[in-house]
Length: 132
Image: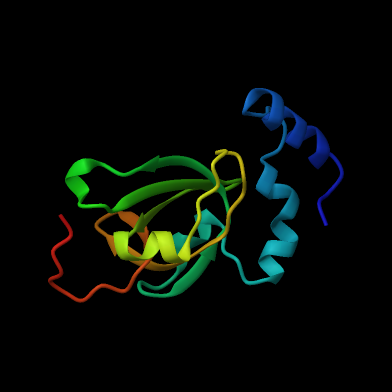
């Protein structure tokens, strides 16, 4: 159940696309945590390869022509952002990204560490698979 004040944040996002109040996901964090969903900041402390569900607002969706159909998505919660990679053979079948960018959408991903950037990979890919 959303905490008081959530209605005003939803109204802000509906009318302007942003809010200066609390982040919308913050109102749901207790329920999301009880369901085993992970906050973006917690990704830093999880082991590589672990399957996680990260709820958040879709900030950016990109599907560059040079990426051979791979979609890159950035989601945000009240603690930070997470980068998602959706492979072309999976995103249509398994994930529908909401058309309005402020909709919260939990995504199950496999955590993949690359240098200093944590990425959530929608698929388990075999080592040596050509990505681009």
